[in-house]
Image (cartoon, rainbow, N blue to C red):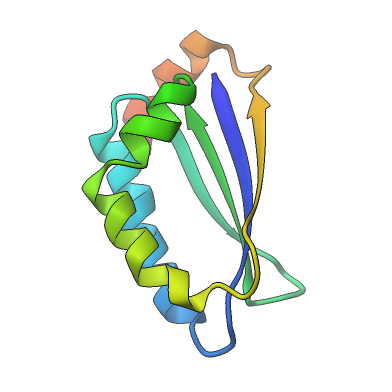
Length: 113
């Protein structure tokens, strides 16, 4: 599986808007993208304007093509880009645990928010 860990800093005054927009992208990703198996939004405890995204996809194509061309991603990116405070940091990774079949088995549970 292909995973990515993203760090995003948001300008002061846009935290709540960013979280609302990101929730839509996260839910759309796991609900509408067959190749998306995880999309966590995390907030830094020491900096309320720093967020982390942990995403897991079946492969790089599911991330770079299917996800980035999905309507919810395009809407998210257009909405939140003006609120970015500096560059986004992204670390691509391969998953070790759970196994690929384990990620796939967890997907139905992600749809029960």
